[in-house]
Length: 578
Image (cartoon, rainbow, N blue to C red; front, side, top):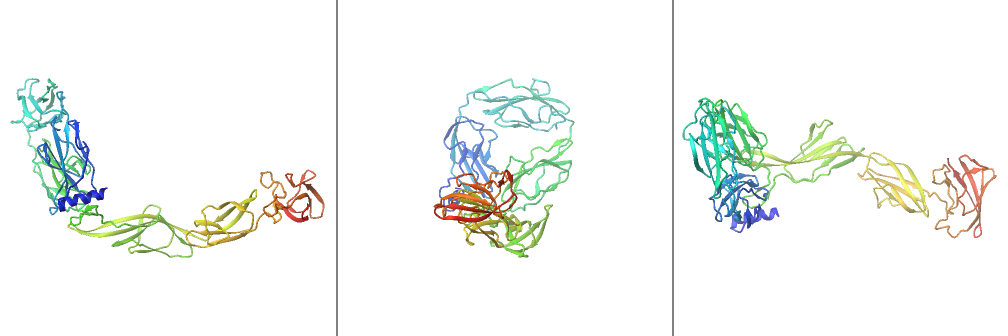
C-alpha cells in the first residue's frame, strides 16, 4: 500500500494526477461535530522527510494555519484551536527540503467543528509561572490555550484587583501580551486572564502573580552559523554553532524533528556557543531553538530555526523516477554455519551484491576483530561472528557507507559415533532407538543410505527384521552406519530376556510373528547347558521368569525345545541377562 501511495503522489507531482494520501486518521474526512481543541493526525509515509500543513475555511485555505512545517511528526494541534461550527479544510503537503524538488500538495480533507454552547474555562500563565520570583521587568506574559475561547482579556496590577497597569484589556485570540512599558522592578505583580467566547466568560477568573527583579539587561537572541538556518545536506554528526551573545551567561538549546519536540536536546544548557550532536537521523528536518540567558533572565522573542540532514541511506524518494530508494544492500545469510573438523580453514563466500564487505570475529567480551574485508573469509574456529555488507554513496557532504549486517554463529561438525541401538518390542512390531554422539547436527535413516532421513533418533512401528542404521551429519561431514539384527529368531523365539522386574522382557516366551503365525506350539521345555530340565511352559502362559525351584538363575545361555503339531520339534538357545 505504501509503495502504491508513493507512486500516486509522485505521479501527481510529475503528471498532475490525483494524490490520494496521506490520509487523515483523525478527524476522518467529512466528519462532523469535531471538538474545537482536537489534534489532527495522519498516516505517515515512508521516505518523506517532512510535512507542511495548511488549515483554512476553504479548500486549500491558509487562514487558520499558513503552511506550517511540522517536520517528520504525524500530528498537529493548532495553538488556538478551531473556530466553532465551521467547515475546516486540512491540506498536508509532502515536504522535500531539496530546492530542486517541489512540495507534493495533496487534496484537502474536510470536517466540521462542534457548536460551542458554553463559555471557556479559565486558564493559567505559562510565563512567568504563577509564584515566580526575580522575573525580568521586560518579560512578556503568556498563558495556555483555553479550549473554545475566541479571545482573552487581561488585567495587570500592582495592587490586587485594581488593574492599575492594564485594566481588563481585550487582547484578541492570542496567547501572550507584551506590556507597553516595563513592569516596575522588585514588585509583586497580579495578573488576571479571562478567556471568552460568544457564550460569555466564567469571570471572575482567579488572579495569578509573580515578583519582578531589579532592573537588569537581558541578553539578545542569537542565530545559527553552522549549519545555517534552512541549510540542506547537513552531515549526521555536525558541530552546531551559533553567534555568541554579549552579556549571555549561557544558552538553552532545544532540538527536535518537529517544531514541538525535543528528542535530540531538551532545553540543555551550554556555556559556550557550540556543541557536537552525534548521529542525527538522515533525510530529516530538525528544528533548533537557542535562548541566551543571564542573571536577568532569558532572552525574549527568540525564533526557531531549522536545517535538513543528508538524504543518507534511505528510504527516500528518487526525484527522477519517483521510486522509494534504500541504499543499504539486501543481504541473505544464515544464522548458523558449520564446518567439518578436518576442513580447516573453512572458506565462506558472500553471494550478496554490495560495494564492500567486512567480517568480524567476536570474543567472549563482545569485542570485535576485523578478519576480512573482502567477500570471502577463512574461518578457523567455532564462535560468534558478524558479517557486514555495505554500499557507498556520494552526497553533498561527502562519501559515506550504508551498511547492513548480520550476526551469525559458527559451529564445527564431525561424523557421528553410534554408541548403541536399542530395540523395544511393540507386539508384532518393534521400536528402534539410536544412541549417537558427536558435535554435529545429525539425522537418521533405515536401510537406505540416501534416506529418507528424519531428525528423530527413534523409529516406531518398525516391522520385525534386520536393519542397517545410517546417521548422517547435516553439514556433510559423513555418514555412520551399523547393521542391527532383529531381536527375535525367525521362529519367533526371543534371543534374550531380562528378568529384572522393570516390566520389560521380564519373561521368556514364544512370540508369534507374521512369519510364524501358523505354527502351533504345544509345550516348551527349557534346559541349562548340562541338559537339566529347568522349566516347562505352555504358549498361553506368561513364560519363564528365570527361576529354578524359586531361586533366580545367573546370567548365561539356556536351551529350549518346543513341540509343535505342524513342525515337530524346534530347538535353539537364548540368553538370560541380569
